[in-house]
Amino acid sequence: MEVKYLDLQAQFKENLEVRRVIDEILSSGQFVMGPAVEEFERNFAQLCGVRHAIGVSNGTDAIFLALKVLGIGEGDEVITVPNTFLSTVGAIVQTGAFPRLVDVADDYNIDPDKIEVAINERTRAIVPVHLTGNPARMDKIRAIAEKHNLFVVADAAQAVDASIRGRKVGSLGNLSAFSLHPLKNLNTCGDGGVITTDSDEYYEQLLLYRNHGLKNRNEARFFAYNCRLDSIKAAVANLQIKRIQDVTEKRDRNAALYDEGLADLKNWIKIPPRRSGVRQSFHTYVVQVDNREELIAFLAEKGVETKIHYPIPIHRMEAAKRYGYQEGDFPVAEAMAGKIISLPVHYYLKEEQIRFVVESMNEFYKR
Ligand SMILES: *Cc1c(COP(=O)(O)O)cnc(C)c1O
Image (cartoon, rainbow, N blue to C red; front, side, top):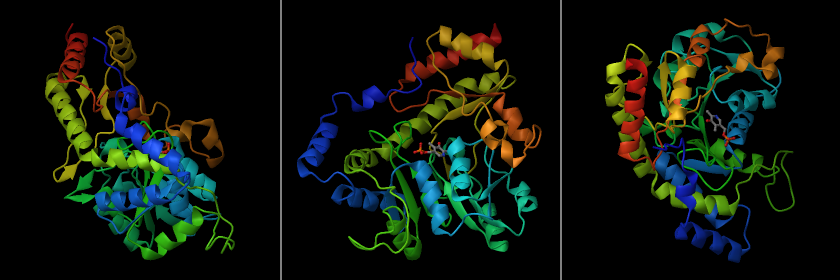
């Protein structure tokens, strides 16, 4: 049985509604920003229960602009984790700030108990990543930030529609950054991103930051960037936003099927952590396994596609060399990197496909 890691073709193939809204944009001649972007921003703010959403070019730029609007740059330090997609750290580096990495806890997210020792007089912000779609420990993180007068900018690229005690992650922290990349839960037909905030001041500033600093057609308040969102991407994302609750529901059900099916294998497999009051978006369903490379080959042989998010911690990459981190600096993240595997959990999976993956894994460990 073939089980693909993702099925983007299924989402867009013969989707007449997508074709209709793209055709509307083509006829309108309004390709950058405009009414479709404004509508998307209203919808996204409502989804997150937050005052403002600002559509931008991609998730990486969303993190970058959120840091810029806080005035973060050269000479500052920003705290984040080594086990994220590399653009979290890339966005911090782009501002000129030093990426101060902190190890993670067994939920794959920043370990709140390790944050305070990483804070010094140059620290300006904490960037927790809601990895896999499981919200980071925002209560503890915000308490530490308040105590030390730091900002919290959440990388919520994997966590759209996730929540803690009914509050969506986009409303937790000074600003949150999301991605609309085709691989994300709420996606579009290309790159796109969103920033959410409850602050009117950051919102007004971000409108300038994403559009050359222009305060009107001809005058810039300061030199800035072109990080705008295209109308076609916003129009397609507007369709996606209507079904995001459905998508989260389905991914949650898929995750529950895996949890149940893999329970027998707990000597070899560690299933994702759960915490009460938390709604995860299951952007990825990550398990830690023994004999990973053999398992991946065994599953591939059966037609089951898997991924690793992410095999190389960022401090071990050539790009991070100048920051002076060593192997062994982040033992939890490093140990996880050698054991994690992401199983298919997408919206278009059928129950029998998940059962097949579970059976195959049982066969692998029990033979
Ligand atoms: C996808 C992702 C990003 C970057 O988003 P892009 O839209 O691809 O720039 C940043 N952080 C995390 C955790 C991601 O998964």
